[in-house]
Image: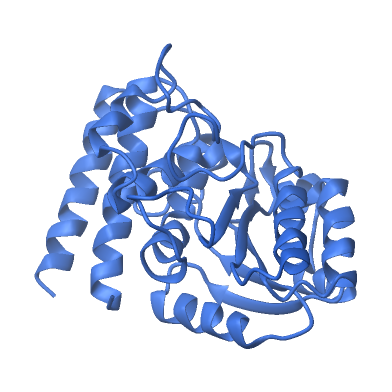
Length: 278
């Protein structure tokens, strides 16, 4: 799939995420939008998954460690064919299978229930160890927030991953620089992120998380790494794609009202039309 096609899908992922959060009247748009390009590349280019057989034994695994950005995750899964995109309007509603955080028991394509920050990466490490022990060749991917890596459990898991030389594991850090309380370097700075992971025996790659050529090159590089896990540190913009949400910590966990939703969707529609003309 070429860069233009991936950009179009990512734009639809952003629309789907916002639609879900708007109809729920709650949720987390900022981080869903910053990670939309990463979700798109993972599910439409990188990962071995099959919407017709979500639980096939040799599928690649994905764990959304920053589980609150489920709206973007769900939109990507829906567009990939795991369930109808129309169901995004039921997000967080009573009785809906699309709950506020990923639920492996009720959502096709979800490999791990997550939400408590720091825990998802541990599950991903366990999956990668399991593949090694059983001689399976599936790969494991997990997406973390940059605020999330302030959690100690992340580094316990990283220590084990490096020690076990899990070259079938790829961590992706959505480095948008903001968390619910503000700038990450003012709350509890995790910088330098690359040097910290290097100390845990990780191969580190730093990229622009909105550049599909850079994203593609990073995941290709990760596949060539032997004897150690990889972390891709993706520099992103919180709220990417909606001008009034970009780089605003206030949009971490707030749903748009009717007027804001209309403005955001009109902006994304125009972006989609521009991509179609390329």
